Amino acid sequence: MPTLLILGGTTEARALAAACADLVPTVTSLAGRTSEPLAVAGQVRVGGFGGVDGLTRYLREQRIGAVVDATHPFAATMSAHAVAAARAAAVPLVVLRRPGWTERPGDRWHRVPSMAAAAGLLPGLGRRVFLTTGRQSIAAFAALDDCWFLSRSVEPPSPPMPRHLDVLLDRGPFGPAGERALLAGHRIDVLVTKDSGGATAKLDAARELGIPVLMVDRPPAGFAPIVAGVGDALRWLLRTGFTAVRQAPPIRSTTVS
Ligand code: NAP
Image (tube, rainbow, N blue to C red):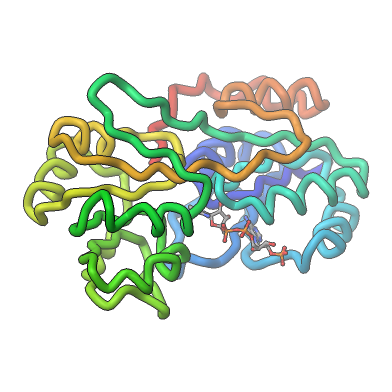
């Protein structure tokens, strides 16, 4: 039976692997950025493929029958490579991507196209910044000596980093009460986030406390069909010939973080 390749690193990827691993040969691929990744059902491989050529070779050699790109919405390089390699190896591909966030009454959002644009607007919006953009984005804020940052990430960041920085090592999901207490306790006056989608606790807390949000827009999507949830990904797999996934247990809506 051909193998299903899930490009992972997200809650949705783990949920899809859990639904499929007992029914079809399933490999989840992780970049290897996290030293202690959460458990994933089925087989796991770790590390880059070696660009488009490497991934194309992998798809052929491992007899991959379908690829679900369930990477984070900001993992644009991996997603672009997946489109090119799937086309080259003639393997069906779908993108499993949670919807982005939408502004609600009371929100004070400023949408920006990039981290650099967020850094440019920041000093005018606030000086005590909660940075939830992930450790790889911290460098964009390194020159802002007039701001104090609280950064939250799973792994510690590496230089260049802002001069005034406290690092909170933590992994979601995060609840509304905890997010409110964190923002109030650190007297945060601006929140910076990627438009990752999923759990809204930090955005709800910012709205309740009247804190402005710098919302970094997603990079453009590639040319591949997109589904928004694990149930839709399973239906796509059924249509692609992975008929065994018909027996997958009903999918409850996944709590994404
Ligand atoms: P990226 O910039 O799009 O990818 C850079 C390179 O890392 C890719 O060219 C590929 O190397 C390798 N890579 C990325 N994802 C991979 C995967 N799932 N399996 C194998 N190799 C992978 O990726 P990124 O933004 O650094 O994200 C890395 C991982 O972290 C992804 O799996 C993503 O889902 C997860 N993640 C990212 C974010 C975020 O904000 N970017 C947030 C949460 C989780 P080769 O070219 O050698 O194949």
